[in-house]
Image (spheres, helix red, strand yellow):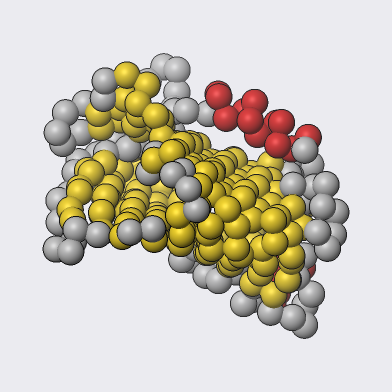
Length: 294
């Protein structure tokens, strides 16, 4: 719970950067599907020439796809969110390095119990596309992650409160979670036995989504995931919080500040003193770019 307090306090200070996003909305011919999407291409560049204060030339590019596929018919609903992102940054001293790499699918099937309450079954899947490395003194060090290393799969029945597509909370008191690591050399880093493909957990899960319009053309999207493993240290709640602040400039350009904070005491992260162990993971996305429509 201490980690959760740190994350919630830190989240208010981590909104910086810019994204370029295009939002699309279409409907299935049966009028039971609603599809919303954002396609973002980000460019962030800085250059210095004879600059007395000094500086480092840099270039970064990011590609992000963020889509919602929602189904509603009679008492049944099915909400799906797909997020895929990849980015690279370049500096003369360090060359090209990965600055973003995510693939996430969140799915929630619901049967209406009353006006705003649902009986549900959820499924979440998260992984990445390419290898990740630890860097020391501008040199590439050990490999610390890869495609399907790790991958997280969780699912289970539950109950949800759904005010609208912009505000919903799902609680699953009995949910399974699998931490899968395909690369044997990385399994110990994610608390997976070297001779096993996955670490299996059983616990309680809470997923919350809240999107609010702060003022005209400015919206804040919050995604929070909590998990407590009944089988080991249930008091140590795993936390994954993502916030996106979007400021719409015009039809083609928007500014976005994004921050993600993760705490999982089963994941070893590199620390400043050279050791590894549980710690708060923080990711920020910065950039500006143009909208590509397709």
